[in-house]
Length: 384
Ligand SMILES: Cc1cc2nc3c(=O)[nH]c(=O)nc-3n(C[C@H](O)[C@H](O)[C@H](O)COP(=O)(O)OP(=O)(O)OC[C@H]3O[C@@H](n4cnc5c(N)ncnc54)[C@H](O)[C@@H]3O)c2cc1C
Image (cartoon, rainbow, N blue to C red; front, side):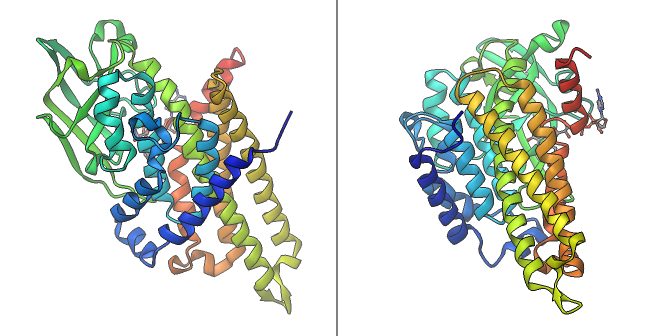
């Protein structure tokens, strides 16, 4: 077993960290969180650097010859470490892995040529439209329909809680083309802003991740030409499951980087903050709390690297994806609360920049399958 990374990967990750620290942490960081503003200019800078390009091969505008999930996960960890705007890193990962990667993996040649270059450069923003009002965890029990007509399909329905929906140029949207066969009728479509009846709704306000807009998309008698069906009719279930594995790997990698930054900040604070005439890090209650943060970080890291390795080697990783999602997202919440405790009253003050971590972390135990659903998957693998 070899735990070292190739120099090419470590060099790239260093460049990503340097770029993120220099270009993505602007003075408006706290204000954007306060007002719920998405930083389009920073998104575009990421596009120029090649971040969005990690999800497409160079022949379709991507940043490397082929998509390499190991390199991407490692780079995303670096991005999460360098960039203090967790909302932005979530936005990037949702766009790249749930949307762009679905097209990279399952798209026709024409679909790839039409959509990937615009998405890989950051010019177009993508959304993954799956959840509905009455189908969240039970997501494939959806109401949205795709009625087959001459030359294409008519989509009707409404998606909710969709990351980037209010500003999406394109969506990979799921609708049932044959409700009689239940989830086996669920079909994926590439729907874009040029199509009538594709209606992105305004931003919905939320607890955290305020710098990434989230909302509803209505499909109102939306005609989608046959050539925009992604994969075969009825393949939506497997397309979604497949791309979710990439999504989990890389969204979580960004969070892993954020956890590493959080740990560094907690250690520095514990060394510099004095109480009772000594640094608070001398008190075991504080140092053990930080030791627990380190343990959560390293266990999450090992699980993430294993998951990325499995995907790189085309091995099934559903169980590992569920365990990683459950462990890392819960670890991030626990460590974010610990970070606040270490910083005391300062940890509670918005301007200090620590409390935001907890608000941003909580979404992770809900989206892409709640922690309960991950436990269900793990239990099923154990024959329960
Ligand atoms: C920040 C954020 C971003 C999101 N981004 C997207 C996106 O880009 N695209 C998209 O399509 N969706 C997105 N979602 C939606 C997300 O995937 C759903 O919220 C999630 O799957 C849960 O569905 P629900 O909210 O309807 O909750 P419900 O399914 O109603 O669950 C409510 C509670 O019941 C529990 N529960 C339900 N069923 C079971 C069961 N069988 N066993 C045990 N417990 C169960 C759940 O764990 C939860 O505690 C996002 C959500 C958030 C918070």
